Image (cartoon, rainbow, N blue to C red; front, side):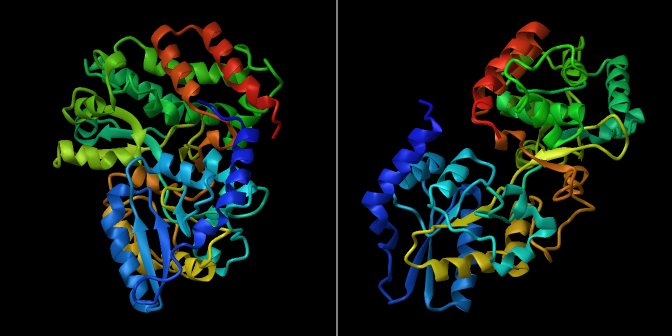
Amino acid sequence: MKWSKKIILTCIALGATISLTACGKNQEDASGKVEIEFFNQKKEMTQTIQEIAKDFEAKNPDIHVKVVDVPNAGEVIKTRMLAGDVPDVINLYPQSIELKEWAKAGYLEDLTEEPYLENIKNGYAQRFAIEDRVYSIPLTANVYGFYYNKTAFEEMGIQAPETWAEFEKIVAEIKDQNKVPFAIAGAEGWTLNGYHQLALATAAGGEEEANNVWRFSEVNGINAESKEMQKDFNRLDLLREPKALQNNWQGAGYNDTVVTFTKGDALIMPNGSWAMPMIHSQNPDFEVGTFPFPADEAGQSLTIGAGDLALSVSATSQHKEEAKRFVEYMTTPEAMQKYYDVDGAPCAVEGVIENTQDSPLSGLTELAFTDRHLVWLAKDWNSENDFYTLTTNYLHNGNQKAMINALNAFFNPMKADGR
């Protein structure tokens, strides 16, 4: 069921009036310490987060951090927020629609003036500002681009492309040698979300420009004849070329695609940094490299992503001072070095030493937190699922008219909301 913004805000307001006391339920634990709740959505990192919380407690003996890790965390936090049961510190994804609505409803603390924002690289927290106010502290980020079979590229004398024209040439060379260029998951359209959003961004000239063309244009203003739309078709059509994709790509899932790639049955896989652990688990000895989405000109390639481990503070917490002390500690190199050494995702905290030279992700992470690391375009959208569908539908049928109709149908309802 899809909820309108008005319904969401109304529910939040009602929840706030009946449940504000819930936020203060853990005033002290059995030892007399102030207990704060940290609601974690990074389940795979729970053990490391618990270790970091213990380090914090050693420096702050008056505070106990209760790390909460539950199944279906995304749905659980929605239910709790709507009920007014807001955890003291929450791992929320900063580009999400929910964070925007909860911030506007007064559930999240305004952190704009907190001095520890200076610990975040290149003003990255401000990239997720809501009406110029910061409600989320992004500590790590994900990046999206292309994985490539490093061994095969070297054997074929191919280097990672720097321009779109070079990329087209590489794909042609791979096919000329009777190899398959791409492994994609046609059955899981979300895996191509980054590809299509980067296609839009490179076609239009950037993040804001892309949303001006597609999201904020006039109703039914998307048309096949525009130069931006023609470039988008060109980028999608690279995947539609004969013999460009692995056999049975239409039914392939995320895991199937990684297996195809690591077996060497396809040489390039569009995907995000989150795929690296699965690649290693499938084949620890597989030599893999990465490169960003090429643009028309060298030096303009792009990656896309958003805050991953990102922290917000409850505006109604009974322990706001203690919660902010914990968030401040999480912005230090001491805390985040321990996190990075396990997670490996680009870290936004100044002073953390990253393995940028030897990491297979270095082709993408070198752009992290720069102006070539875009935030997901969907930060200005109301949904994404239908975008996944229209992308995979086009790869199936190549029908430009159907794509234009689908894009207008997808974006038209959003345009009534303005910017």
